[in-house]
Every structure is written in C-alpha cells, then in structure tokens.
Amino acid sequence: MQVRYCRKCLMPDSRPRIVFDGEGVCNACRTAEEKDRIDWSARRREFLDYLQRLRPKSGPYDCIVPWSGGKDSSAIAHKLKFEFGLNPLLVTCSPLIPNELAVHNREEMLKLGFDHILVRPNQRVSRHLSRRFFSERGNPKVHWDAGVNTIPVQVAVKYKIPLIFYAEHGESEYGGRVLNEESRKIRNFTEVLEHQIGDDPRNWIDDVVEERDLAPYLYPDLNQVEELGITAMYFAYFFRWSMLDNYHYLRDKIDFHTAPNGRTDGTFTDFDSLDDKIDNVYYYMQFVKFGFGRAVRDACRMIQNNQMSRLDGLKLALKYDGEYPKTYLPEALEYLGFSEPEFNSIVDMHRNNEIWAFEGNAWKLRMPLEQLASQERLTL
Image (cartoon, rainbow, N blue to C red; front, side, top):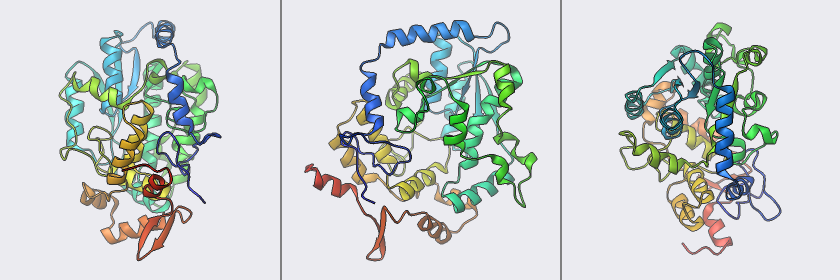
C-alpha cells in the first residue's frame, strides 16, 4: 500500500472513508472550499425558520445540546442562549477519566445560567469495556462513543424535547462518506449507528456485561423518536465552523482553562479534547492504526480554514505528531488495568503492516511526513 497525502492539507488516504479526487485533494478540503461559496446570511435565515417551526410550544427547554464542556459545544450553547434567546438543556455523557480542568470549564459555563444533566455510566462496566475494546479494537472509547450519541436522544425522548443541536457533521467536515446532502444538516440516525457507534451494543454482552448494563449505550426505539418528532441538527451547517474560532469565541466569554503544559500530547494546540484523561491514548492509537496523529488532525483543520499554511502545519506535525502519550498515562493504565509493557505490546498489535514496517529494532511509517516534504520539495 502506497500512502498518499492530500495535496492541499496533510491528511493521508489511510484515514477511514476519506476520498481523494483526480487532483490528489481530499474531500474535506473540497468541503472547505465550498464554504467560501455559501451564502451564510441565507443559512442563518434558514436556521431561524427551523427554530420557529421546531421550537417546542411548551415546557422549560427549547432544545438539547450534547455538551462536553469543551470549546465547541460550549460555544454552541452560549450562542443559542445569548444570541438566539433559547433555553438549552445541556446533556453530558461523562468522560471515562474526568479531567479537573474540564470540570472547571463546565462549572464556568453553568454559572451563566444553564441546566445540566450528566450521566455517569456504571464504572465497573465502563472500565471492563475500555480494557476489552482497547485490546480488541485499539480504542478504549467505543462504548463512550455510543453513549455520547445515544444519551442526548434518550433525554430528548424522556423529556419530550424535539430539537437537538449537535456540532458538526464529521463525515463531510473532515472527510468521509456522506449518505446524502440532507445528512449534512439533519442528523441521520442510520449514519450515526454505522459510522460513530459501529455495532449493536448488545454484542458487548459477556461474562461481566449484562443487557441491563447497556442502558446508557442503547438508542431509543427509532419509531418512538419519529413519533415524537425529534430532529437533530448540525449547528455547523448554518454557521461557518472552525474549532479555532470556537475557542477564541469562548475564551472571551468565560474563564476557559487550557492544557497546563501549553499543549496536549501529540499536538501543538492546548484547547481541544481536554475533558478526558484517556484522550491522549485515544489519539495516539489513531496514529498507530491509521498513520496520522493529533498534530496532523489539528493542522489539517486549520489549513482548511485558511488559518495556517500547509508548510507551517507540516513543520508542527513533524515536531509533535505521534508523540507518546505520557501525560496522564499512569491514570489511563490504572483505569485499563494494564502495566506499561502490556500497554505497549497491545499498541504494537494494532499497527497496520501496510503503513508500518519494523526496521532497526523500531517501528517506522512506510511513508513518513519527512518523505512527503522531500517528494514535494518543501523546504523545512
């Protein structure tokens, strides 16, 4: 397998579901180009029209925001409340290993006058599933991915709140398989089940996990969702999306704490995915399985939004991408129940031999970013 990198950003074609066109440009970059041609004033009017039609006529809450307390979901909640006059209910699926700085950031938002529901699933079951999924799939957050998708819908059904605002449609924003144009705007539950959860949680039943333990991870009956008229929409369809802009917006509104070391492991940013101490392991495994890490991810998003040059992104990626996740590693190992040698052994089990080679007593990417720089004559 010859790994190719996008000619506009740095994303390799080893990213799941990404597509390159005949010019060697990924579909995430093409989506970013389309943003310059969108009439955002018209999108705003469309948003206001949906609010008028879908906003509940009674009850205390106008909508639900699936909320981590991070910059993206907090920026959305803040705008809905203070720019559009809604009363959103914030709903959180608890991080696996909560980070104190994220607790601070959530409290700062709640001081502004939001109601909040936090669901912390059975920790015996969660730790067991994390250990199992890390071993089997190289992803300790499979069940969390399910919970963060299902719990807001469960709450919407229980409290009969028909409107949910998610952040961005990842399949179009970052390169993936778009089922249809409408799915960029309105959340398609079939797409979520296929791409973000991946299988039926009932398949996780084993000698520790019973079906009743899976309640936080199971979607409500889709017929019931349809009967209640629950519509989940992507905020980023109506308003130009940028993780950097969301951070700049939020830091002016609350005392938003960032990574104390000035950046998070594997990247150059200090403001993203701060709520869970296991996230450093999660992103490191992305690098192991797919050959790109957190720095490439962050750089690509900024390159696509014209906030960074490709060359500057490459320099930062060469410096930080694939960095070993030392921060919070003791807590992650204790949570997973592995020693560090056991952890490293499992990591190596998930290396794709099509993109990795074992040379000189070490694993090396077959097509590293240094080779990209050489091929394209980029002067570092």
